[in-house]
Length: 189
Image 1: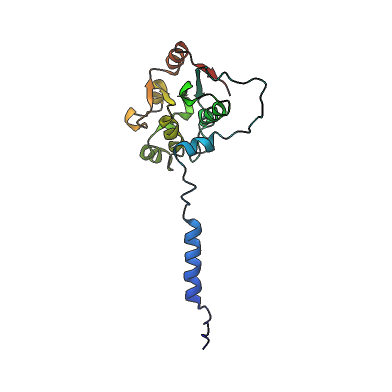
Image 2: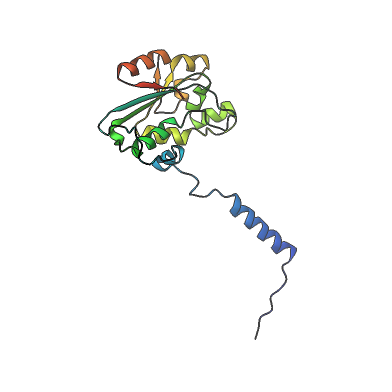
């Protein structure tokens, strides 16, 4: 005996529509990348086969970047924040071991609030801090995240409002001088 299918009722269609919308609106676990996967994604580049000027695999590479610009909107990361991730991937492609790559971000100016904890950033900007996952991944990978003390004072950001791995320097100038004395080169985008 064949069972006859009933026609969908307006109520069952509504339930189905709600279910479909809920599934589509739920973030995928694959989208929420962290750690090394996030560094790889943020550091993506176009491979160059057989470069004629390759890095010496035995060299110690020490690089610092200044990140000064505020993000275009509070829901975005400041320009330049992903440069260390990109450098990690480029050095890896050259065969330079990660242990020989020493990187730092020197944050000041308009980019300073990007170093705030999510609760403090949300209170100040009205949205979650989109920089935290990449900053955390880079800090876990050994990137020094340094903020200019003058910038936090001028912007009335207390140390307690910063992410726990952020190092506070008296000023960006002092931090840059110390890093240069330690052999770091400042990269300009």
